Image 1 (tube, rainbow, N blue to C red):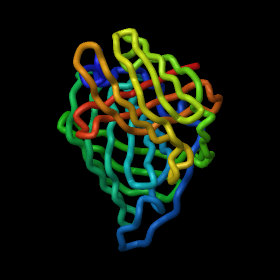
Image 2 (image 1 turned 30 degrees about the vertical axis):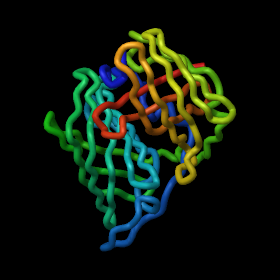
Image 3 (image 1 turned 60 degrees about the horizontal axis):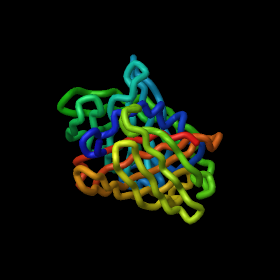
Image 4 (image 1 turned 30 degrees about the horizontal axis):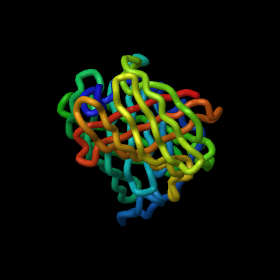
Length: 244
């Protein structure tokens, strides 16, 4: 089954558990727009009621946000964030894994550098409160060797197993039990020491090819890897959890 069809209904566990590293940022002025590099960059986690949230904000202001509801990963969002003083706003796309649908998403709120985020994310299907705390694990650099190996997991909660192989050069290859192959690259991000840039093309016997890009993280024990990716037009997204 192709990624663009299933949009990865996978139990990601959460970025909180999968990330074992990362880098932080500084604060901004009171009345001027400041670069995300010096504002919200980092790993943020928290919960509100039965919803747990893990967010990674990159140096360029892009944010990947994963939501678990009653312990099940149900959706994730890819947003572009801007800051002004201690306020932020974001716009992008949310991917609902249980219904294989996308919707426009936006968020607003306030933040304290390397401390907390308080806000709300709004979509057509409802609002989610964001009450997040900074996680310093984001400040430990990742190396390419952390990602090297053969990782087996699923994009679709176990209905189709995939094996992703990362070579010492960063070359990514893979295959699935559903008749798809994968080819791409994994490389550490320069501006975000905890993370990897990820891109690959999926080619399937039925349905042709699709290209995806996003980020990858490796857990602290170097035994688990996660991918969060979307197509260039943001119409499809996928989450992958693999283990050696």
